[in-house]
Length: 262
Image 1 (cartoon, rainbow, N blue to C red):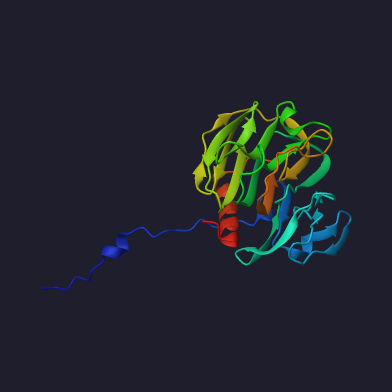
Image 2: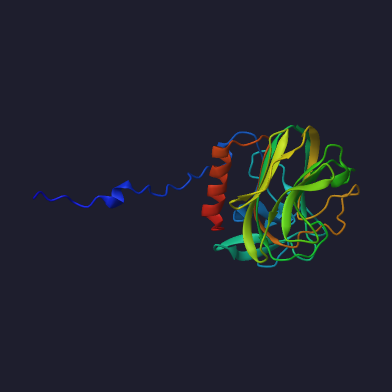
């Protein structure tokens, strides 16, 4: 009788990881803030010295997109958290900290945003992970407004905000790290935490933004009013277009491999 080797395992489809994509390899990169890159963290809004000490204030977070949309904050800046995640440094926004990128107004008709953060505190009313506005306009009052990533005060849900309400909601677990992705095609949006995506919501985006803020509300006087995130943030990436599924998954894979989120 002839001998037949066992080939049962040959027919099991192997897991093929999603290829990572470097953020700069995709067009329309508008903002890239990376806390693991020590060359981008400064102790003064004008530049100054690099921040290397745990707990020291980071008053300027340089933009790696090439657009020089550096984020700054003089009075309530985040602080450096050494080895905050996966042996890499992150920024701590606890105690009502924030940082803001201000730039020449740009009309957004589509957008995709990513934020790597840890949900460590439920403090703060309608806490912003990432918000955007125009100078002298409160973020949620901006005509046709769209806030990419925000948390409801009364639940563990995170969402986007559009048409005066929370949309595309996803539930989070306290003391967990997440990659938040908000994608707006121009006519519809979805919010995603790690592998869980909320429902699609119909909304038209045709708005000029000149402010992108991490960690707090933006009010018309430039301040914050109890919309503080109070959680660590590792990386922020914003594109001025709706990424394809391949592009979006590639950026998510890049962030997940780098920060070891899930």
